[in-house]
Image 1 (cartoon, rainbow, N blue to C red):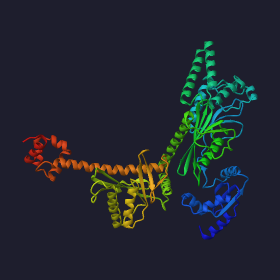
Image 2: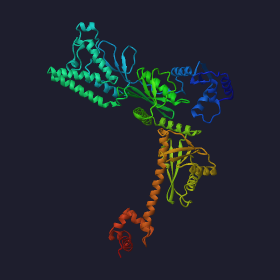
Image 3: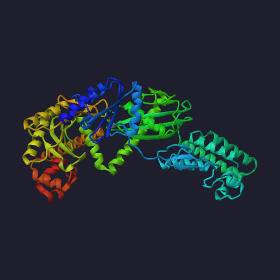
Image 4: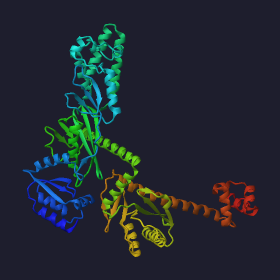
Length: 609
């Protein structure tokens, strides 16, 4: 930010009132890039421009783009919240919390017309029709429609069934009538009142209540059986079976929990996922997840509030249950009249919240997998940005090297270096090292030797140095690497992956003195770092195991007097294992190494003279 621009911004901040209100940051193009609320406008806005190491990378980028500050004074902090919410919806500023999922979801609509049709749609038209949903996928919506059409006989044609047209006798029954899937309202064989009762049953099913349709089917089946109409009775029996099958596929919650809505929030770096579960009559009748960008200073309570508002307006049909289960209270409850919010600590309501959280995690995993498959570059960019921001690096760590040591009670010490480029293992650059100058189990001295050898060679060859070095260990391993880099005159960021034995996970350390960097265990960044730790450990242990195995094989054969290294190599090349050498007949051994040496081998293993 230029000095003149800084001074101009300072003057604008100094002129802001101490009253509650809403502020807007504007860039050089005149675009509003951020909207925020404040209890005191001057105090809140000035905090953006104070020297503060705790500012995230996103906040620092935002501040550099500000050329003008606008503000609106309101009467209270609550008014500021409501105004901020409406401005964000209208302006969609780049650095605010925003909903990313703008696709249209499938709904089931009961048309406002004579003899209403029940259909699929993606368009919500305020024409008096009743909409149910939305559904997370077309497959889910189609299964509900198929069930309705299998159980309740409603028309599927697009005819205009106004009373005057039916009275004119312009229509005749179609194949669906003869199949028993329609009662023939087009030909005057069913009146609107009887048809309306069927529509009411369908709407009850769409709301999650299967009882009215069950009572109807049971009564019709008994009536047909009493009239000795056994084929008709069998059709109603089949529809009851279909109802039982549909009921068994719904998730039954509890007889005690009747009508509630559940929201959970899963933050993930610069993104968050809000899951919504609707329970009606003790059954889960809808599950939906929306995705948000976290924005600058994105508070989880604000994200939950925004997502809940969106879901109420576009998913929940404008209404919520009287009780709503949440992981924590939203930033305001004023936007949800007549709703009681519950933050459960135990019992069935907590299990419902955990079900919602699992659904959000599954959705996130699917989205990340799709992102990785469809756009691997974007996935890598997201990962590198997350690591850069977590460690506050000057640039993205596209080239990372990770070190680990391995030994068995000080014997055969080895080390390994694995290389990751753009978030992926570069296996052709992996390196094994035999520790040469260290005697016994001294991990820190081993780390110093290997790091010194690694970067002395890279510098001599003029090769590219890494953007980040990661030690598989804690503060002591990081300190050993730092000593070597300072001696070589290198300035490379160092991080550590320390084991958390209590939770059986890794913790990220950074800085000097090293401090714990908070990363959510469910985030892609955490999985990436854990993968790196597992990879370097696997590579070191496999080399150490291989070295121990070779040492054992050679020591076993070298115990035989008169058998030298060349003979051992010839034996192992031919027989592959010591066990096969031991089991080999004397004739085969003699043909390979001579009668005298064959006799010595047989004598050693079998006590033969």
